[in-house]
Length: 259
Image (cartoon, rainbow, N blue to C red; front, top):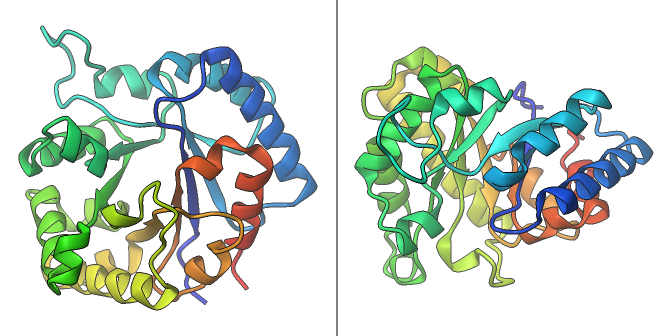
């Protein structure tokens, strides 16, 4: 059994007003209580407008769910209209920050350089990045999956120290599986996760390779989670649509419990 504690993260994307988010996290707390999460860590990542509301509920009710954000800017402050800084997030009690999600890379022009700056800013503020990597269908069909995801990993972690790399979370999210209903097979998820772990070991050493947690993301639900997270190098899941349903998300968490 892996010594790494699985992390199941719910990426709510651009869904839920702050009032809806409060209801979802309260229902999630009840669902998790009914099905104990055991050794699984859980995080939820609301939209920026709901962070404070969700944080208040988590703290007031002592819910064992970590608060996460979906993005961050790399500067602590400055003339960056519309952006949110790592200092602002840390002050809200945010513990995990998603960086480099493919939707931001594809639709908002986010570059490897931006991802690297955001990742290092997140670490600097004392939070943990969830660094997303993943290939397109065309890259997969061309046999370039490992080349692409390892290249993204190296670019994102440039300048990161081995001790920092050891506490990172890397989310392998094949782009062709996000929101499509298509999912990588457990064997596919394991092969890519193992390649990423080897890459971390080669660049940052064995302690970093043993410590980094690697999630799988891409149409994860309560029906496929156990097989995906049951792979030796897969340490949890980054869940999109299913995380908006508290009962379904709690079932994913239950499926991720170490066997």
